[in-house]
Length: 577
Image 1 (cartoon, rainbow, N blue to C red):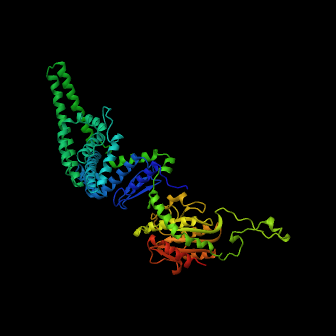
Image 2 (cartoon, rainbow, N blue to C red):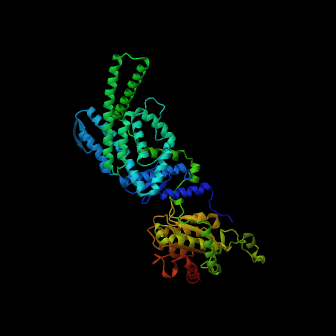
Image 3 (cartoon, one colour):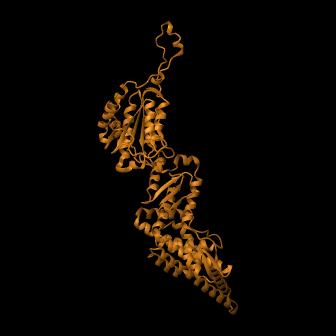
């Protein structure tokens, strides 16, 4: 017996990882979108959209989980008004400010406007650092798993050298240099995120040789940040840090000037001269670094953008073949994990209904006037011999599963409402039990449809020629759909049956009985099925009313343990001739 249970470690890891991603943050709806180039968050819908990629890759999952925890955290713990006020107030308080109109600022000169823009840019970047940290602290405090995921994501980014500058260059980018030093230290000290100590150790040694005079007061700011729990607090710390950098820039200039003046006045030994030259050069580099930071119009490093860029690159690097095999979708996450325990349960249920199901084979042919409708065709070679006494003028019936005595299509509702009271679990088990029972009879042929499907109104998950075991993993979706296009699903089942030659044709509809609008109404579909001689019966799962069906055309399964008695009623009272 062939089972469609993908059980390789990589496939198992993929499914587990997709499940983790989908449920990674309470209250956040995560969508894995096949055409998204990178991740993004829609706060008004509370939706995180993730790109496709290799969801069996633990590093890719770590990055994804970090994004899912980080971005919605801002929606919960960041005050966007306080954030926006930083730029507004900086511009209004700047030298040369005259007026504003809908976010457009008027200054007395272009130079003063540029200076105000640069200061707003630097302050905004610093607020971002402190607010990221206070937000992640509160996210980790309120969601323990998120704390672990955020730390793992940071550690991976450090390991990939995304959180540090190139320490081999003589003149590092001043904005990236200072902000990355601050951000890493804040994550270490405030959040307890270790990162990668080997990578950070070399980076810190390089930074702290240059920033040595500033370190004591920076450490005081780091200590204050440990108690910061709001965006307003982040704004205060950003102003303190900006003012500290300004003051040390000015003090470094004075120190540089003093040592420049000392140099020609003193007669020193060669060794002392070298030390003085080195000191002058040190203060010169510090002045340049701090001054360039304060006057740079470079964009600040945004942790969100950095993380999103790395995820987008990982997605782009993943081959189409790997995405097809190991890519992700919330539709890949089983609503019911069909393992051997569930399989054995439904096999046992199938035995309990098998005897009653067999009766369907014994029913007489209904409204079949044409030989073709009864699965028979004339053999022309024999037909011309009938005047000579040949009586068997029909072709031998095919033994293929496309032409047999009884064809059944089971159409199962997988709309979101099936989640209520675990209806989808009873529905899946009912679907499996009936299908297994029917396939045990050689002249019963079963196809299975679920609706609505991911991209269509319905989808065939098992054809007439397949066994349940060959495609059992496709039965595991139970409540992923949005609407309930029952009429369209019935049309799909009708079309499937009209393409085949069976003596008798039956559609069994498994649903919670509450359809939505569809292109074809239930009434129109039932009229068409009757025209084609197709019988339709409903199997309600915890239904009070089966919309579109008469009272004597459906059964109600309130619990899977009731299946045997309800199937008996289905066979003898509804489908009996």
